[in-house]
Length: 148
Image 1 (cartoon, rainbow, N blue to C red):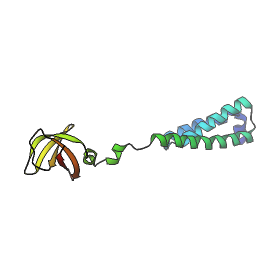
Image 2 (image 1 turned 180 degrees about the vertical axis):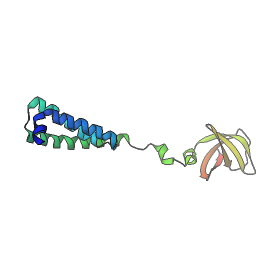
Image 3 (image 1 turned 90 degrees about the vertical axis):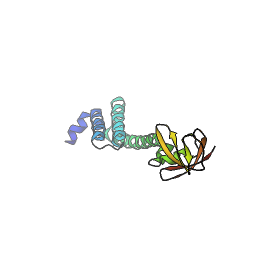
Image 4 (image 1 turned 30 degrees about the horizontal axis):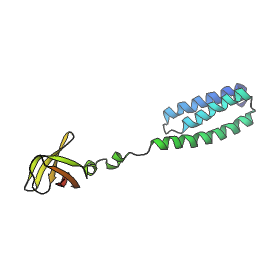
């Protein structure tokens, strides 16, 4: 069995690399793909330089470590959370400090503002419809406002 693998030469590394890349489809986690790329690169180097199997194994080990480190840094740079995801399920908190126009007058401390495609209940001092108000805090699903 090992003799068959060694007889394949550089193709053994390329087949291993393709198998590892295919394993990434079955067990996603962005790990096997880097090992697969290292194996394919080892096969290509072996084909070009006619390396011994011991040298190929060392090249694969070094390339695997380098590929995993480079891959992790590349995927972590893209995985930085945006500021909106910090407010998931707390949309009202993203509105603090923004200025809106009252859709309905604030009477007896309650009114409504239009925010994009939705209407929010607001509380604050009585104001006429059309007045600009600034959101100062959120209490549940109600925006607390003051005149802007």
